[in-house]
Amino acid sequence: MECVFGLVGNGFAIVAADTSAVHSILLHKNKEDKIMVLDSHKLVAASGEPGDRVQFTEYVQKNVSLYQFRNGLPLTTAAAANFTRGELATALRKNPYSVNILMAGYDKEAGASLYYIDYIATLHKVDKGAFGYGSYFSLSTMDRHYRSDMSVEEAIELVDKCILEIRSRLVIAPPNFVIKIVDKDGAREYDWRITTADA
Image 1 (cartoon, helix red, strand yellow):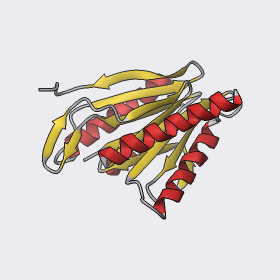
Image 2 (cartoon, rainbow, N blue to C red):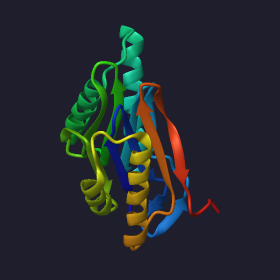
Image 3 (cartoon, rainbow, N blue to C red):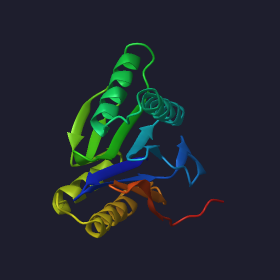
């Protein structure tokens, strides 16, 4: 019952993800952070099989760091998204990863951006996107309330509306969510929305 979604506002991008580690009918933990800080100005929110999700996002993170170390320049968000898509496309013909990604970033020239990358290596730049069962509710909520000129406060209010819809409409809704933001000041954790603590 994974839920990952994000949006681009006026000079920033926000991504949110549930924090449940689930296998079959078992809930293993409530504080699994599914949003990785890729570098100082990029975030990767991922859903999919836990092993694939962790291994692939760490692989991308280390390769982005290696590129910056070798060349002295960080990859742009678009370049990092295209690298990620290329690795998924290569793996698709050998040993595919079951992972879906929303990559958010901020570049000085391009500003904030959000990229949708699914498990079959589809890449698309979007203003808002979602993966998982929660996408049925978060996408329709964002379609209704999203504006490209939103402030951070308005975007957080919209994220909270999405979380409320997911919690109230999904039969087995994830109780906890983490929200992260990236803007000119960098990528960072914004807040958690917690209804159930870890046992």
